[in-house]
Length: 415
Ligand SMILES: Cc1cc2nc3c(=O)[nH]c(=O)nc-3n(C[C@H](O)[C@H](O)[C@H](O)COP(=O)(O)OP(=O)(O)OC[C@H]3O[C@@H](n4cnc5c(N)ncnc54)[C@H](O)[C@@H]3O)c2cc1C
Image (cartoon, rainbow, N blue to C red):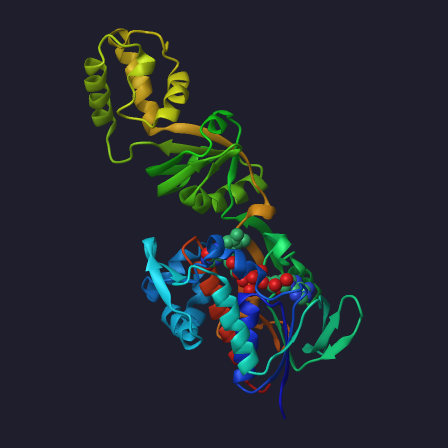
């Protein structure tokens, strides 16, 4: 008997799951509520799609804070090399950029979507667009089909794969429907929160620096006065606060803490390679060099131009003061600012701009070897709908592809 499989959601996880289920012998219908497949892939990596990372696959689990271990089996079976080969088979050449980020050589995410569509065509997956699923039908603890939202049509199925994505960037179709479907099937949902998301600050001065990128900077995050994380690299000032790679990585911690009404502070170290003594020596040298100039005109060697007025104001040293009159105490205060520029985080920019959702279907209730629900037979989950989220660098798409592959393949088993 040919198994009937319905896949809900035509993103990275759903397309991979559908193709794989069909490849292993099932008759597959892929239901997508939007007018096209792969909307989120299309905008990923600023339209270039950072599909995975070239790093050692055995280290991958450490790039998914929280539930990385859940992905161990999927990443082992269908890891970065397998994914790159998969796309090669469909004519997509890839290249590796900074930090091991893998992109299509064409610098165009549409080549990834096209390759996946070709895969679905070759494996004879039936695609139905504009079809939102509102319910997974279950009888005696086993899946029997799905019900569509608008028409109420019921599609019978021997297995259902939920690959509806998270709740971030809802314009792409991922509006959190999967959480409702899973909850109705008895699953626990870990509160979905925005992750990899820019942060708003109480202080208004970041607005004065909007557009300024700082490289080789360290930022640490402090929750209720305790340091909870630190990142080194690039950050960006914006009209609302902070963004850029290291901020996005730290945002996951901020997001959870803000949700729990905790105090969130971010401390920027502008010169992480220098000790406070070394910074002080640099300041002394520059103050000597610019001896008779006003303090506000003496920081050019240490700071980007646009940052000077902000640092001068924060130092509370009279900007007009001749620099050789700056006291030791004032210099020490300035020195401290270089190492610990404190910002109070008031909010994230929210789901609308979050690259990924943390939280989702509790991974403990899913078998990581098959992606099958531990509660309902022949109900599978794949991709961001599960409570897994990775850092930037291609890890989120890899997780979607790996879990999609695993779920699709697992449907071949006869229960
Ligand atoms: C701006 C941006 C850039 C990103 N860049 C990268 C990157 O470069 N590298 C990286 O690794 N990750 C990146 N990510 C994250 C990555 O794109 C996602 O984690 C990944 O696409 C999730 O795949 P998914 O298949 O689980 O979900 P999605 O891609 O969200 O797909 C879910 C699909 O399900 C459909 N759907 C939802 N509900 C229903 C329903 N009820 N019925 C039918 N269909 C439904 C949706 O319309 C959607 O098409 C980026 C994310 C964003 C927002």
